[in-house]
Length: 421
Image 1 (tube, helix red, strand yellow):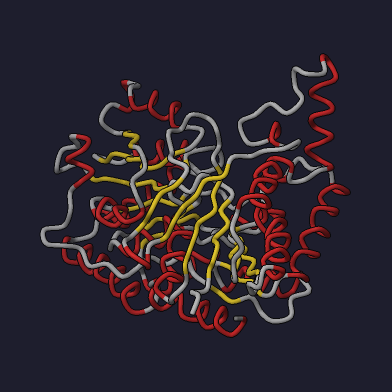
Image 2 (tube, one colour):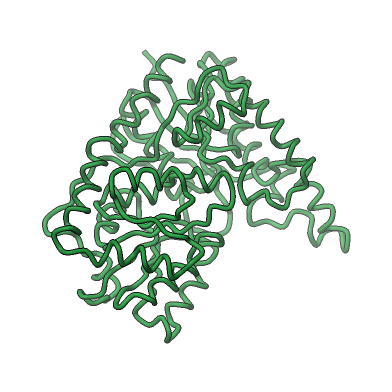
């Protein structure tokens, strides 16, 4: 009997994309042949066009497809029509990006339609993948495959700062287009109950979206606890480590976090991640004012994150909650910290994360726009007695071991796809 085939669509290079990788691994363990279909961005990043995760029949294959066709010139990192039409090029470029949304992935879509082998299940990670999933599913059904489409709402992107400058009529059109995709999807999943509630109120869903938390697999820290960050940076043992995980860019609270750490007696902010601000933050590393108190490290593979996170004394999630998407967010970095037994300081208006932190006493809450208040919350965590701090770490490990872990979170999703199949 032919194994069912699943494709996890990821509109980035998947180098790797941790949620997509966890979904793919779980589908492979459930008996699927699994491919992660990602983007080859063409910017000389050195990523291979094909990679294998695991061995034998249960391996997950990641393939990166190059944008092609008429829309390829608008792919991420390319210039569209700017410079091709003289003084009018930028204006035409903006019009095309507005009206042919999402234009920057349509070249990738074109390649997928031509090259991606058919599948029984398409798990579409985010709004940039769902549009092409239906075309792929239709062709898959013609070839005898099931062609099921699951829309994974990884964030509420049309309620985020990404669209703050989009004219209201155009944004309304984008939202109508997404609602149309939702009507056609066989199922919708999302990252937490708060977003599921919002989607149920907003969209024409046939049933409540299935919640698949961004939780991490269960993990137990070795003894002694890892100290990878100090080994990599030379931070002395007496200096406390405040960790920021994830994407490095605007509206992440990075300026405020840096100021807060300087207000502490002896602490360093360590940024472990990637993004547009990486070079700027490395320059700050060399600023004499931040010497030894601000260190930027490259990202590590998701499988290595727990040990690196366990090397920190506290994590900080100081994102400003100035959009619905941010208020309802519960990103990987939050769960990665708790899974490693590392307490967290979160912004006061990040309602999902705040409720978990306060309910189980897993850290502290602060105003993310106020470095002084962030420093106060960091002290609240770091200046406890050794016994109280050890108990805090144990609560983080206990709550993720018992409730908030991938092994528990993935169950309803696997039941959903089996029912659909």
